[in-house]
Image: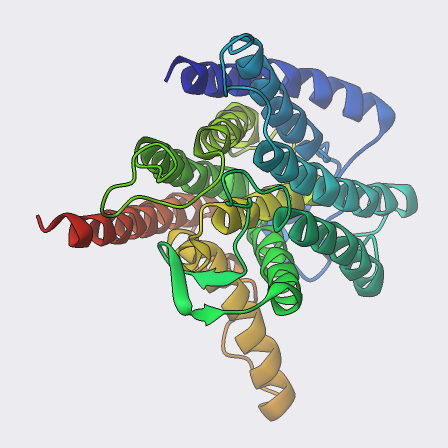
Length: 358
């Protein structure tokens, strides 16, 4: 338990102290955000705000995880694990794709960076590499990922096999990384929502650690690999998001950019895969799903009828144009995320209760 607190504390400390340094540095280097011309007029005042703050979130997550392990040196079975390394690889890899996207926006002074093909290729390379490696490195016959579709645990009839799993894992990773990217449109919205979902994975992975089939083969135990290390990653990420949020709340001193949003979305999907809760993430991250669906619906309906369902997509901009202030949208969307997380954790716990007979 001490290592979990250390990971979260150092993730928070690194992020909250490093972010103002990044603000100063990025401002001097001219790393300012470009704003969509067709967006709400209130956002035009944000032009030039330093971006690529996601570099701090990624660094704080990795730092918090590694520092926690320094306190575990010499303890049997408490070293760095394949699962932890794979999760960090996924986060850093997608963060690198986002970094390139952000850099091109700054370099060419436009609101669009990498084209869709280049971004998808980057996500493809990182996502496939993670998925292929995750079904290897068995420990006690348990690999970091399972080739079976999962909800709260593996759904036996939905065994996919390695090839189909890798394909669907890539789609899942790309989908959630883009979902967080679409949600990152208001000050603090994505960082605050991500922190709550990471918090749910702290609870889920630690619960799996205390009910791990490799240490206690009882009814309802979980066949997962390295659940404590997963907890350390999730806790460090939660702390990093909260530290960044201190400076990212309205009016934001810095934006996370695609560097942060792709990294956070990728890590969330990775956590779902290694904890065998892929479909549960749809509930826990309900806000991200709703925002993405708003874009899909808007585009599909407009192409079919030349009319729009929403005033503007993604969903948060619709409410802004409907008269809600930016802070009102942010707080209410945080509340929606909090309710989704509470409901998702309730589903997770209800599944465990079904095995105990309580």
